[in-house]
Length: 321
Figure 1 (cartoon, one colour):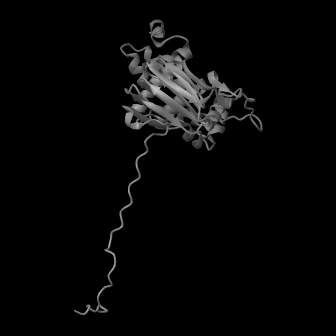
Figure 2 (cartoon, rainbow, N blue to C red):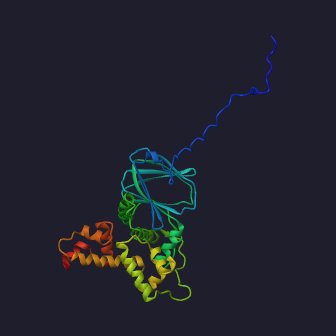
Figure 3 (tube, one colour):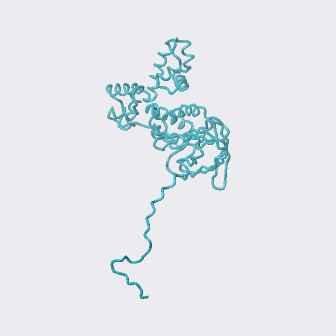
């Protein structure tokens, strides 16, 4: 039987048609920005404010595994242990060192260095990431000698950072309502403490160029009114500086030259004065007074009040109420 002739209208034989496969979704990263396996964390919180990045990371996993981050220019990382019983073995080339953490233990590391550590025992850390630009900002705030870096620490206790970290847990748990200026003040308090106790690479202090920088009476009054209004409005130091038509850095230096203290310290003193007025009123609890005056809680008020007045709110009330 003769072979069948293929008509010109018939399609030429060829491979079966096929559909292009859709691009496969990229797998989610197995570790977060600090090298932690996010799936092993029972608390994994993150908040940015005041020029810093804050984290809280907690796990009940007794054998968490390895944390690893490559060298970068992110600045420094400070960790504060909120519970004890944690151990980490830090690997540096062919060498390793083991460190135990109690409540309030601190570690500081430079992101410029590769970091690798094996973690055992559950942990709960508040972590603070400090860019180098933030260190320069704190240098401007505090005046005096400047520092360029933080010394490394692992497993040493620091009760001041431990107390500040307790305040941070509230901010991390409820970041949305957090007052911008309050977070900025908290950040500067943390920065000033870190530079004072762990700062390295001291250089010369700030000297105002082109003569003394001062605010006019009008700008001083405007700045003070805006600072006091931060109990009611969500303002930052940058907002106040811009309202005075000044850069943030120039405003802070000029305010310090004009008033004799930084905007941060001046506002804390005003809040303490308001707390003193309320402490004279019978029936007001110290917890309520702390919130009314813009403090995170009673412990925060007590710490600031004692630093300004040299006695606790309760002791002051017994004498003056």
